Image 1 (cartoon, helix red, strand yellow):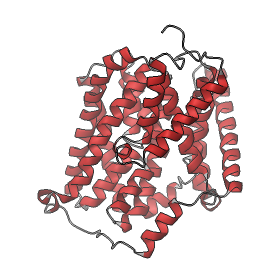
Image 2 (tube, rainbow, N blue to C red):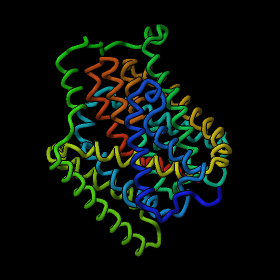
Image 3 (cartoon, rainbow, N blue to C red):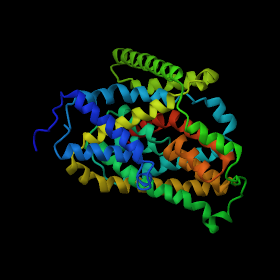
Image 4 (spheres, helix red, strand yellow):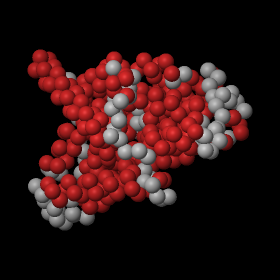
Length: 386
């Protein structure tokens, strides 16, 4: 079908589908099958199908431009309000060392994969994006894509599909590692599982199930909008003075981390920021699914699966060797790797699921650090490879 059923200027219908797909992803993620795929891939799958059967338009859509140009940058500060670097360095302990080792392993893995797997002219951009997401998490996937100017489309969608497939398998490996007797015998054990029903476990679960106050949620949005306004204004000035793109998303990230580190108490009180930021990121996945062409996805998908798998294999080997060298706990290595790949949410969830309650806070702190620095590292690595 050459002309989609919904035209690009039918904004109400397009927004309804984007939000519906995002809601479907969140809800379906709680099912047995959905939990194995992730909400992001479910949301993207819905819009991908609707686009390729001729219902949704794939290109030149004002609604998609709004998500890419405004909502994704808006999500970045919202997810960084807890990025107090001083607290992270002070409290994360050995898990922070494991996190750094994992990040170095990701960089090495990306360099090797870039030179082994041919990805064409945009290979350096994909290297930047994959290294960012495997140092900090999925938030950095979107931020790095924005920073290297790789817009929504089939190539980006193929990258997300490959990332989610490899990540799903990798998380299964992470869950299984602590049960491998060969590995357990070669690492010290400092963290023990808490019994089900402990007060701290129950408090964590109750907090996750509580909707944030409306006032602090609105204030979080206002502050995030202000940070985006300042960051992109400074990027425009930099562009005028030097003729080079100042990358507004990097400036917004830097400003947010500076403020979160300088005013940690004030930013810790902004409940609701992470909820809204996560929702906006889900819309991002809806848009890249809708922007995809199935033939390009099929062309690049297998290569990107190999690219991602090679990065994660080298990351894990390097992490286990470094952890053995520095005598780190195997559970610390597993949580640090999860923080590298999925960010604070999945790392904390794994710590809770394993009942390693002493690792819940280090998981959150290391994951937040990844959010703060991964886009800079990935973007710099991509330009260096270029």
